Length: 597
Image (cartoon, one colour):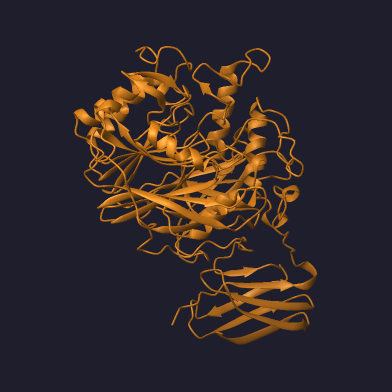
């Protein structure tokens, strides 16, 4: 029989708190949920290691100034088994965001966490540390391109509901810098104009994180994220961007630093160099099964798009990052090496012949062939196997082999491929407004290394890793025009350990070891561990035994005459029993026996 942990909520009628309903249409999408005050933006976590994880929140103070609060990390949602805790301070210099690098945790363990300010708790977050070794399966959702005014984040909701992954990899374009699109009913994005200043970027992140779908997915899973261009400006590179007018929109160096600072403030990322938000490429290890290398192909050392693709002075990731990646790949002992990055690595030259052809998109690795060849040489010269590239950016989904030389690649056997690439479609960002299925056969004819393409649908992908194989599964939502719960599994492609090419999967992957229960969507209503009390008129005298199986004895005192209700919740946050005591006189002492139902 399951053990029930006492988590009691007493509601005095005259002082009960009414929870705002979650927005159910676009005009309410980022409306404040008053029951979450002062933590309206929820919580988040990220960049797990075997003994540490970043936890995040934002406090919205009533009066400007320094805010002090506490944080707790526990093994249960009632925080009886609290493992770590501490005090935090935040202020306007950090946009009132809070980031704690919680250390001293156990590997491969689910934890719950919360923040408290002035007696008010945030929602409870759920996170998971990475394993040290011995894991036979790891599962990740990977997403990109979540443009707020372009549609609803239904893909985030479907990921939240799955409860069968270890973390979410966000491959960039978490926000968009554009002004509102003018679509009726989708104008609640702030600011409404194109963002260029630090305050603008901060407010844009605030809009996104008030969205319930975005807030909920962060609450349930750790994120491993990296930016693309729209976190600053479209088609950005080190010294500029297509969507930036030097002078009229200020200095690019300023705008870039504003976007980078806001990203560091609002995302649960651990900087590889403390205080340097310009450098975010880093490694996240999941034991001996996978090393994840998050790359920056945008802002650190990218040259202007266009020009001679064989010019050795032009870079996509640059020499410093390339040398770091070379060292890490050579030293990696993990089965799988995953490169999480922004732009398509696979060849997309049209009418390829004798090494020449028409580049369809010079913003991706095709436009920087020297860097791509250098990376491929590192992989092949050092016999580095099981390399998987995860990509976002282009609002469409692809699965492909990565030929070193197109002329020497065998599409039937996969020989000549360096590794494989999965490109996820967008969460909401637009692609083709009409289905293009009739052209998919032509894509395979012109580019035989491309095994799967979807140019219209929106959604997310799952990467499932085992000792034997790595599979990418493609899921699509029905629509982003309205809130909708429908999704479909389209197809999966896998690469076997020791090979460098893809095969068609017969079925989608599933999780062998089930996740712990989700974190409850509403905050605990008291800072008292184990017992929730919404009224200062109540005093809890005792509650024993706790936890309990069949019954518990509770003593309490109320100094105010009022209607009194009692709710008992279990560890999962589910209501076990509700009791209406009716109207009770003040100074009433009650001892009761609660039977489990």
